[in-house]
Image (cartoon, rainbow, N blue to C red):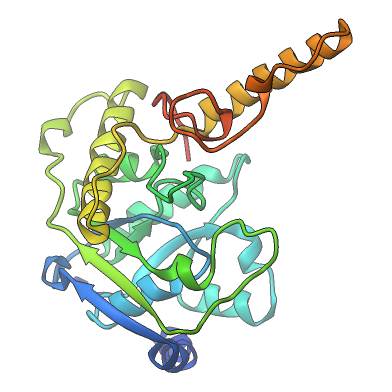
Length: 286
């Protein structure tokens, strides 16, 4: 089988989701010609809003090649949402458990059957203060090397204006109508990495190539250059802990807390919340 049949549950989800998306949002979709017409493939997508999985799924549904997403297992646990997730063939990810590897096996099987599997390589909403892609996890790289399937980079922008990520209060700002932008690029050439031992270093290198392709597309979509270094959440958290520990030590000695221990959103490395000293990203095996 080269194409995944659009079954009842996917059509039902589309029937429910498309009307409000069409009514409430404008669309700027480009690059659909890069979505393969036949055979299994991988898409790698940036993530900056709780809304963007719907907007991206809408785009790809219209190409006729519906995606199977890797999603956290809690979304599959009953109720209507769980029924839709199971019925549409989405792939549960059991984080930090012995079952975590099953998601990758299921992804490989789906691709080998001719389906599309969509990865959010960052593993969560970006923590970059300016919503650029942060350091990626290596799951997409692992599956790409195992299957040698086309890896299609996708950048999206605009959903965050309606549903901002990590807002302290759940704010939805639908008006004036926002534009949901999607830009798809040509397949990423990973052939130089095939048939090599999948070491941690190799997987990190492949992941960096993937994240570079997504970031370049997003820079084109946004019309501005991307930062020289990607936000590294693990490094930022470690720096935050170090500075907090230092501030506590100073307070214990009766001295004033160093102002540099506070967390901010600058890019020069002095504020832990947004350090861009690119090293290994969180959860390398995810």
